[in-house]
Length: 149
Image (cartoon, rainbow, N blue to C red):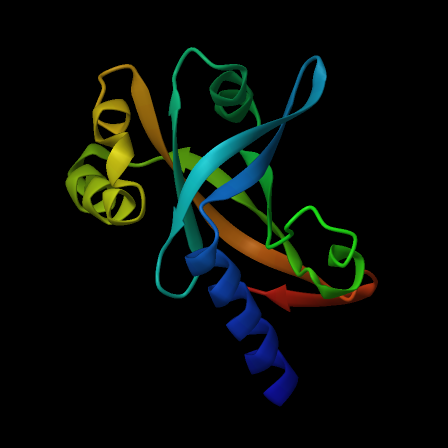
């Protein structure tokens, strides 16, 4: 139980301390990865990001809702090999329903206030990923799995 709490603490630290994640989606032409500005809820069971509805990632998620998000704390230095922590969150993406939109936008803007014009644009969808599983990697090769349900 103690190790689970330690891993959950690392997940929360990554989600609160990092501003960007790599989103992986899958479409007819194959996998696709893109950088997104994200925000997590308090327990990191839901991750939120905004994307124009015209993007490849949005089209992919409209057909295949299963996604992965990679969040890490690397600094792009050689020491990262053994000191960086990375997390892959697997989950299901859906557009935030209109009755929850104001609350989610307010929380999102708490982390990304510079994105207000973008996130409130009519052609932009605010997406919610319900996280099912997290894989946390420490010291380059220590992998821990945490069921988030």
